[in-house]
Image (cartoon, rainbow, N blue to C red; front, side):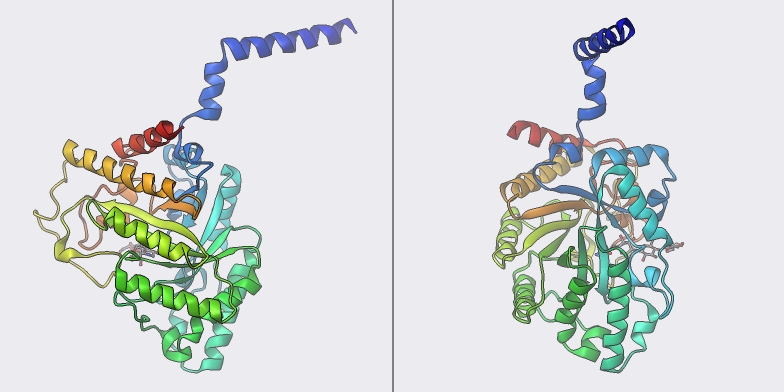
Length: 376
Ligand code: G3I
């Protein structure tokens, strides 16, 4: 009995000590400022992970990923050429690891992507017959979305199906099935995973002609009776374009369709823009030159400040519309990982994210934490 009273007293004492003197260290563990904690009540904070990150090859970066992000998207390994490389072959090893990592870190998974003209498995190109195409799409979507049903929160069901002028992009799916392939994709995904939110995802979503084309397409999908839950606006943006007004109009017009809006694939290009390339049309290439690659020895302070201001402004806008925004996903973890070092010109040194090449938070990161602290 005395022993039990003693141990109870001891526990009370430890609690008092921890809460009086030790509270600082507890706070460090539970409430360390991070993007995922700061924006927890607003929207998910996501990142795209490459294979090395999924394999946790770099322990410092792994800790950063766990701390800062609560939703993961595979940057490449769930695209058809990787996950379904041949008609009867599926590769689930790497995606399964992504799900295990997410579970370990208490993060969600967003699936990218089921039907996309790019990084497409070769066998799809050989299909000329509509029955065969329906059967191949059914197998593809059923097998992949079915495997992860109940484990992920949402899918990019169709990716990048609309051109800049609002017309439908030419692809093997459009060639063989006509525009019915769009509604079909959503119907198949809804059957394979009835719980997941189903998104249409694309870049350059703030241009008026493209926006109108996407809205027309989504309305047709809705009229067909298919379930479409969201629109993903890839945020492959620049320091000065698109304007905040263009972003806001687009968020509102998409949300007016009765769907959620996600800001996906966010990165802000700080380099000179050869050929005024917008978005992520990878057929648009440019040559690297000293003029378009000026920051090989580090980012000047003035540009760091401009980037921080740009991130702050767009996040202030996202917070303003948080009632319709489900998720904001950065396309990569740190500047060194970003595809923007190779697009539109290969081999440049770009700085589009909020963590630097040493996984340290940049001014842009500080500005996002400060923005939330200010609003509380
Ligand atoms: O893995 C190989 C490596 O073995 C090889 O040595 C190297 C040589 O080039 O290539 C590596 O593959 C590259 C792969 O990224 C992984 O780094 C591919 O060439 C390269 O094409 C591929 O680029 C990806 C791109 O999609 C392809 O379209 C980017 O990482 C990825 O960030 C990018 O993501 C897309 C979204 O899925 C859709 N929206 C646009 C966005 C940016 O293009």
